[in-house]
Amino acid sequence: MISRVETLLVDVPAIRPHRLSVATVNVQTLVLVHLVCDDGVEGWGEATTIGGLSYGEESPESIKVNIDRWMAPLLVGHDASQVARLMARLNRAVRGNHFAKCALETALMDAQARRLNIPLSELLGGRLHDELSVAWTLASGDTEKDITEAQSMLALRRHRIFKLKIGSRRPEEDVAHVLAVQRELGDSVSIRVDVNQAWSEYEAERSIALLEAGGIEAVEQPIDAANRAGLARLAQRFTIAIMADEALKSPLDALDLARGAAADVFSVKISPPGGLTAARRMADIAVLSGIALYGGTMLEGSVGTAASAHLFSTFPKLSFGSELFGPLLLTEDILREPLVYRDFMLQVPQGAGLGIAVDEEKVAALCRR
Ligand SMILES: O=C(O)C[C@H]1C=CC(=O)O1
Ligand SMILES: [Mn+2]
Image (cartoon, rainbow, N blue to C red):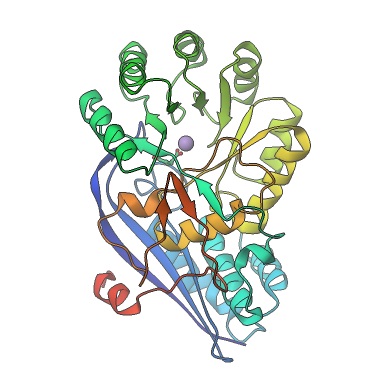
C-alpha cells in the first residue's frame, strides 16, 4: 500500500548559462517525487521543465502543487504494485499535467521494479543495450567558447556528438556559427542543430539548404510545433534528417507525424507524453513506421536521466544516440554514486529499480523551503 507521496523542489545551478532560443537556463529546478510504501519499498521520480513556463505548459511549482493537492491523494492508500491501474486512475481524474504524471509513474515503477528485484528496463519491455551514446549540447552563445568546450569533451572521451542550440540570432548568423564549429571540429564528430521552433518555414528552407551543404547531420524542430504540414514539406525536400521534438507530445502526435511523413527522426522524451509507458508507445510507432529514434532530455537531473536510460535501453535501435547529459550540466548531483559516463557512453544502471541511490541528506540540504 502507498503510505506517502512527497514532492521536493531542488534548485541546482548549471555549470554555465545554457542558452536556447526560448530561454536561458542558469539554474535547473528538479521536482523530485519520493514514494513510500508500507512494505518498506520506496521509489523516486523526477520532472524538470526548461525555463519555467517558456518551453512547456507546466512549471516546477505547478507540478508540485498539482501532485500535492490533486494527484497524491488519489494514490495514497492504494496497492502500490498495480502501477497501470494507478496511472489509469490518475488519467481518469486529472487532465494534462504530463510532467507531473511522468514523475509519479517513474516513482511507482521504480518501487515496483525494486519490489520484484529487477532493473526498471525489465518492466519496460526488456533491456537490449547496457550503454547509450550521449550527445553534448553546445549552448554558451559564443562560437569560440563552444569550440573550446567541444574540444575538451572530445579530450575527456565524454562526447563526440554535438547539438548546437540556435534560433535566437538572425538565421544567417546562426548558420555561420554552426559551420564555423563544424569546420573546427572536423569530420570525426557528428553535428546537429536544435532550433526550438524559432524559424518560419521560409527561413527554414533557406537555412537548412546551407546546413545540408555543410554536412550537418540533423535539424531538430526547425519550425513551430503546430506546423506539421510544414515539417513534412521540409522532410521531403531535404536529405538532412529532420527531427521532431516539440511536435511530439503524445503517442497520438507520433501517429499523426508518422502518417504525414513529417519527420525522419523522433526525439523521444519521457515527460512530454506523460511518462515511460506513453514514451514507449511513441517509440513503437516510430519503429513500426521506419522513423529513426533519438533519446531526448528535458535537462533532467540523475533520477529522470536514469529513468530515461532504462527506457531507451529497450529500444531496438537508437540510431541518433541520446542526449542524456543533464546531470553533467549541473553543479550538484543528488546520488550517492553518480551515473557513469565513459568512452562517449552512459552506462545504464544495473541494479534493481532505477539502479541508483538518492542521497537523502543532500536532497534535504538542497531542498527549497
Ligand atoms: O531538446 C530540447 O529542446 C531541450 C533540451 C535538450 C537538450 C538541450 O540542450 O535542451
Ligand atoms: Mn529539442
